[in-house]
Length: 435
Image (cartoon, rainbow, N blue to C red):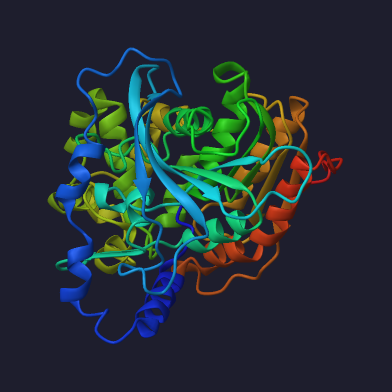
């Protein structure tokens, strides 16, 4: 569910710190670049919510786009705008979501008007400080003592804007927004947030976008699931969008299948995020689920609720899930209420009305391959235009989730070309019936 695993996070952190000018890696230099008070006014939802439709802008402000806290190592080649926009939660009720719009300095070299990519970030964590729209102001986040995060999406965003794509990246529901828990991997909430981000970006006055211009969705891991959800929700929820394609990398298509993969891995902390997401979206289930948690399990969900992924890796790497529950996990998965909530998050029940590219590693140790294949087959059976690509990278150090992290990088360039082809009107090459 994360776009960079434990190994790549560690490597990225080490490389960035080693490149900083003398003194910048010191805590006294980093800490002034993070001040929660500066974010409070923007990220506090209005009460009551304005009576506006999905995708309407609530508030905007300029956004500083840097590679590291001081900005001395450079900036992203785009003008940033932080946005808060109206969206819809998992129960069809209005909410607000934040995000960032990137207006490229580079002209669009392809056909037609400048296209818009709605970017679904991978797992950031569950604390408000992890929100991508905050991280692009800092590049690297740190506050005492292990609250640490690296903006690992910056390289992909920088590559895309340098190629002339406009980008709007959602934070998803509750990530950054004060007073709301992030509804991690919730199918409806994430899909709505992606679709409404596209609508909101086109309402900004400082863009080169046309009001009815082409849109594509992009995401890997959690973002792949969000992009897939947006693709299949679009016909009913946002029929007015001109969607030309969706890249869904390593989409978590069936959450029940994911639990044994996360167990004992470097990213077991994502299960804490998922449980807290359930508590936010389905509060009626919280007392029952909490009654199944041991004291260690209670501590696990309560701590992960406020963590970024790097801190969760440092504190919970290689932990097993069973000690967090007072009954066997298979029994928990068989419980009708809990299983019903997981089944609500399954992808593939609805038909995308635009082409989709699915990428998955055959040996992905975190987001299993088989449900991603089934997602493609389900969409094919409904008549969708689907191309499925298998990354055959061999398994290595599975509990470090390397075969989940590396394909994100390896498959990104071909996926960018696939997206560019959709905007340029190149015919698709679906392979339904052959995967």
